[in-house]
Length: 138
Image (cartoon, rainbow, N blue to C red; front, side, top):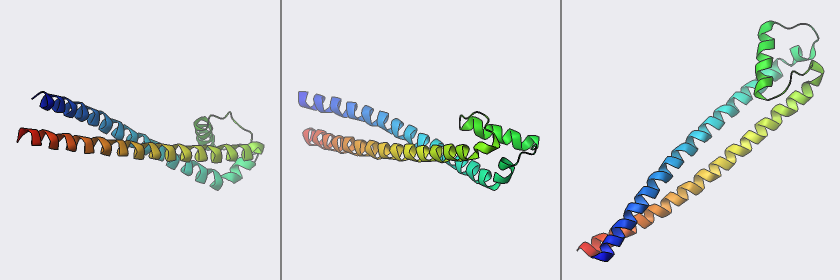
């Protein structure tokens, strides 16, 4: 009977671990979704930047809407206001940020796969212990 008690404790511990791992899995999925959304926004900014490159290289005063949008993009990329002559720096920073974000998403996806493998291992162990419990009860 004591072996049955040990098995029940192990089952409870594994079920608790599985619950925590499922929460971590959900959080990782949310993180990846958030990062992917950020990447989408960066691609949108980059497209907008390339489409509006002509206004970046002119020295004419721009409309307040363009300046506000430009300020928002610079703030997002953590850059100071750059003069139009520095647009290659801005473009490089944007490309670098996109590359870093893609790498971070790739790493998070790898972590997600590792977490799923960990969950499967615990589920297999749980099924084995449940089988052992059932065998001892018969």
